[in-house]
Image 1 (cartoon, rainbow, N blue to C red):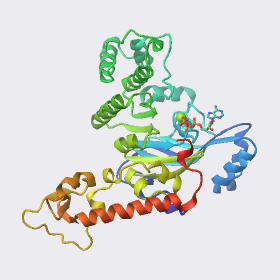
Image 2 (spheres, rainbow, N blue to C red):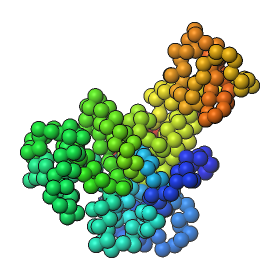
Image 3 (cartoon, rainbow, N blue to C red):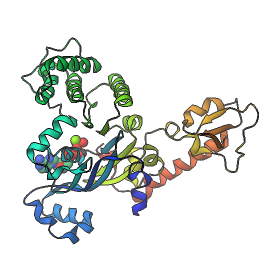
Length: 378
Ligand SMILES: Nc1ncnc2c1ncn2[C@@H]1O[C@H](COP(=O)(O)OP(=O)(O)OP(=O)(O)O)[C@@H](O)[C@H]1O
Ligand SMILES: [Mg+2]
């Protein structure tokens, strides 16, 4: 598939924003002497071919030439089937897993060149991590687990106590402060992990399926809480999830991985309406288009850009779902506003047309290669 299709406009963050994190040609290969494969620079020109040669020799290329930037304040979501390399990439970013090749730049500085000591300082002060398997210390209770990273930072006790109280109430664990991890449910343990990483007030927040152990209602509450925290703190966040609807709610951009490789990076709407291939289409098949497509995606061709008297206006970013009640019987057309101008009109016909076109494009992507797709093991 052509490069332009796989990495649409969304492959880099908005140009006006400084990247907080840059991941360049990142590889993680498990197995015997993986470095030896990177001596010949020409081999890197075709990462997929190199990875398959490695697999033939029983190595596991878990991250294959992974490239992406995360902007200051952006929520960047990583998705992909089990085993596609999501956790590996996330752990390489903090060097909890040592990358085999590539660069990881945090505020422009290459983390792979930092000494062990410098790295510890960076992790303590700049990074927060929530692990897939919680990563709690079994012999410490809730308070002690959450306090631990602050003690490492050398924070004075009074400030520490206040901070810990704050995050514990934020994640709804009041009353369980004295419990040990084995006395907590999976969801509660996960919340301890979230509280602990938040306590540090990290600049870069790395979350590996942080809400996966929570039931749907609590999960939604935590997503709301998470978005609320983000709206004030504006951290740079990398967030792994298996749940596309979760990604849709929180992501500025999504990166989809398969077999260690990046398949597509884009805004949620790009992945849904312009999937790079059947794998991406399969991931997004259950997402209702009316919740993703916006008024700007459904303009009537050639319609006037002048609203008529008394005609209602809608924002270009309003979802089609938002427009339905107005278009169902009440109005023939809605004027669509973007900033200080009207960019066109949405009519019942143009809305149906837009949905039909996108549905067809999605179907075509699914039929395209008939290869094994997400449904096998999602
Ligand atoms: N320490 C290790 N030694 C060898 N192989 C490993 C190791 N850690 C991970 N792998 C392999 O690397 C690949 C990617 O694993 P990773 O944990 O990154 O997947 P994932 O996308 O996070 O999956 P999941 O959704 O199940 O968490 C898998 O094939 C896995 O078996
Ligand atoms: Mg994982």
